Image (cartoon, rainbow, N blue to C red; front, side):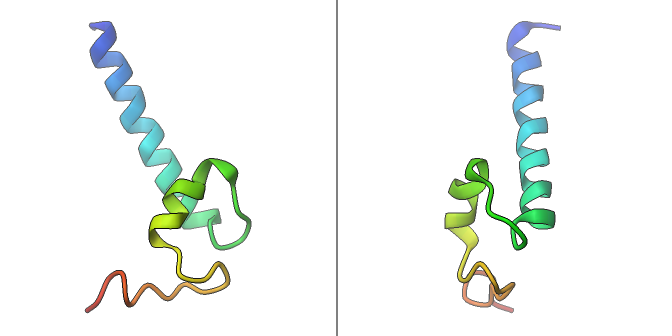
Length: 56
């Protein structure tokens, strides 16, 4: 496996892990590593309302 392909696979795995961590733990306790992702989707840290971000 080429080093470039390996680093790409690790990057994808890291994104998947961080997304999972955001979904599971993001509403319970802020994580500095996730602040960038939270800033995109977060309306209220105590709320799971994302209606304005993801309308029906």
